[in-house]
Image (cartoon, rainbow, N blue to C red; front, side, top):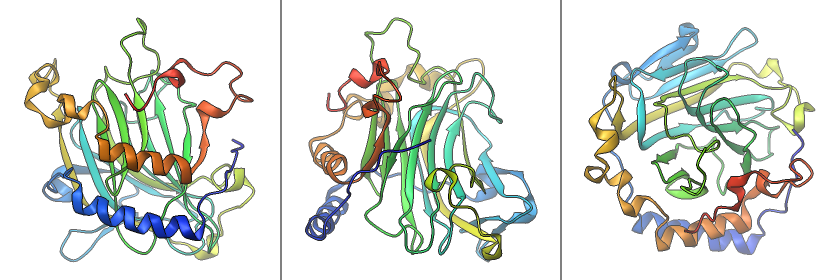
Length: 305
């Protein structure tokens, strides 16, 4: 897909960003305690021989070569909650490599799936990573946004989180809200907000060089393989699904992630989000009138409410 690029940050705005991040980290209260070991939370989806851990088992590595990639998924499904993981992305020449961190209502890419995506799109050495986010409802996506980052995600671990309740989806990077996707009760037949199906959480690394870097112009250099992405500190505070219907879905007031304060951004989060909107957005489907002469209905919902 062709994306419309915008000029990102100047040196002076970067200085302002460092101050902004320092103050944010000092003041933010959103947190979740890492939950147990990899074996207790996840199953390997495929290519177990492309999965390794550190000696203490706290760091998990997925690798991609010319044969295959690798992936894992949670053992449990959830409907609503706070989901967080620390990732360190593939360094060096990562063009064509996609590291995906997402939630999905099915094990495969089924035609009726709901899905909430972080996708990290690799690039040539020295070029910045791009984060693509997307949302699917009943198999329909095409709700992409792309952002640049204010740091090098290959040098250290950074935290990527999803807040999901019946009122909004918020994508966070290091506690900074980069995307807000709102629900609305004004639409009788809601065809854009995923709120009915429980989801697993997944991560995987795979070859996407037919589209991921400069629309597929930059191909994966297999001489640089294996490409490795690393993970740690998975944390979840959510409603674990239990058939036929878990009590926590309807008893929302007992959980911070579905109380009124979690239904909209706080004053500080709105300031952070405004900064992101001004400086880091590379592509927004809600502004792409060539692709959507009539914009999707949800584009009319204010993220600030």
